[in-house]
Length: 212
Image (cartoon, rainbow, N blue to C red; front, side):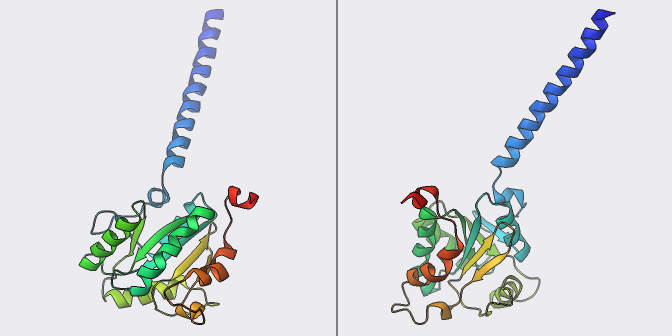
């Protein structure tokens, strides 16, 4: 009789241990996944690029372990983008952010491949996205459609490039910059004054920076 009781106790304890191990395993997998994996975002035409919609952008921000997620619109043919992208990547040294470059070209365009190569050459760990192609229309139409959906009504919607798009973990769009935000700055090639003025105040500094 006692033996049966011990066996049942062993089985209960054993099952609990199995459940505990499985729970820990599932927790570890969940937290080892990147936001791209958590949001189940599909790969685009070229390797190393993921295809996104407006909702995917919001999901990436929501699933990030950082308080803010930033996106920078880029094209290999866009001269301001090339000048401004170093200021974009400089942010992550001092602030708690996830950064993504957002290409606007057609997914199978050689410009998308060229943009990817330019970015990775300068920033090897860059995470690169491209706006998902529409069933109809080209680069211009899909970019305008994307901006119309992502830009809150309190911001002016201008379909320029080299934009800083800032979201928080609730997927709220906190900022969508335009060329007008830096029109009075002394050098159009230098986006740092604009970034310091309207982007950085939205972000949380890393602990080492708070101590300084």
